[in-house]
Length: 338
Image (cartoon, rainbow, N blue to C red):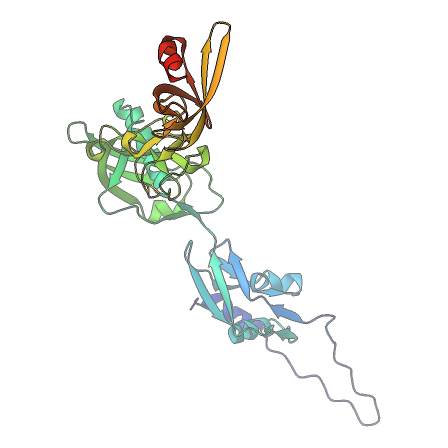
């Protein structure tokens, strides 16, 4: 529950004592009570930007003077609380506004807006501080905090980057401690955040962004680059997208799994036992025949192909889907095959 600002409400209630309308004298018409043009309505949800909520923050349609009156204390930065509608109605009527509706809500949900800082902000702040104070090249280093990333919320209007102050760093163990702050933040000034952890050397690796099935051809959008600890990363992991895109998965590969050279193969465009066109090329001469691939092959692979007529086995290079070529150096074998 959000607590009422007691001193403000006491003044509000004291100033809001309504005297009953005077009765009409005999033989004279009764005085007509003033009817408001519109009924003030309680808002079901409120985003608070200040420590104190005014009546206008909680109720729409109030006169300007009433709307500016302080009423309740807002939750802490980034937190959510509730206020019973009956308490808000009581506070509004204490200001002389009788026509107020709860809008069908028994309570108002109030969320205190805040800027949340994540692990990426903490790591960036620590890296900058290490570079400036210790001359450390932190581009290949990643921060591991002892107790995980703390919850850091600051005033929503503060856009300055997070800073790491009072940093202490041991180059041998890469252990560090630091105090985190955002310039102008009263929240972090009243309650400083101190962190401890270690910088870990990392390497770039290529990982699938989705699960890949055996035989799937890797597209550019299927992979991403991540940094992983060097100590636990195999030496044969792939680090360049060019070495991955266009290749086929040899086996099922899970999202986030660091890709190794053995996980992929070139896309096979000739299947084993497939009928193919065998082309023999020599200066001024082009001969073609039908053959059967004895093995699968990707673009540029040398595979064995059987002439379907003579049953002779040729060595040919895959040049396209269903097409292989025998170069001039193999002319004797081609002639024999014919």
